Length: 252
Image 1: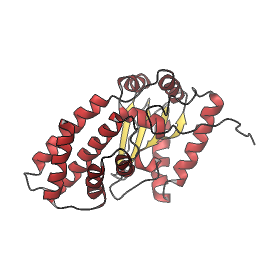
Image 2: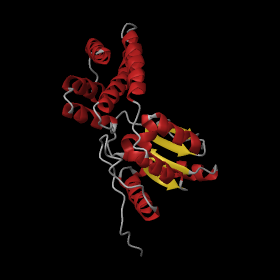
Image 3: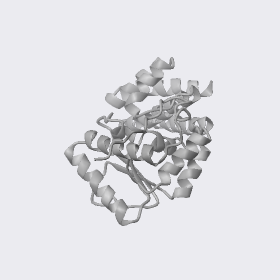
Image 4: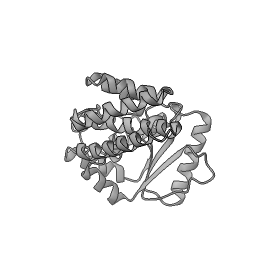
């Protein structure tokens, strides 16, 4: 049995976190793949793991370069509203016939790298905290580029996304469609939280971890509002009030 003498450490969720690491050599990157495969098993039930194995097999079949389990499952922070999120590099496997809770994102290797340089926070999240199931080298190259160039998500891009989402959700509040309001406000408040944290040089983690990160950056009211829509069913008027407060924060 081979002992790995050097290992990958997950970066701290800070502006400096990734830059504090050295570009990973082959041995360090192999240690990450080993750790991530263990997390894939530990963080999923038997049924969820079977879905992941199916996605992995289908990704191999279409010749993908890399497959990553992302989102709350990768962080072991699933909630009742969590999907199974995957990021495939260099392929586009068909998730047909598998449960509808799957969200599958696909990028070509050059597009993924370009997204990192443009500050796409989802691409950064995949690279920082996703569980890599396999990688032919494209993600290791991306990690080297991100570390060498000290890349960070685009805060203004996230601000624009949050502003649009909050505005749309506030319009939904006028329709009386409670379920649509609840679902969309969950996304809008999450985007607002992610924008705020990035603006404070904090990297946003899984959705169920955002509230604590918000508290640590003095945004307790937004933290409370987000917790309500993730774990409860607050009154429509209370949701609308929370969206108004989010809109005010964005405007400031």
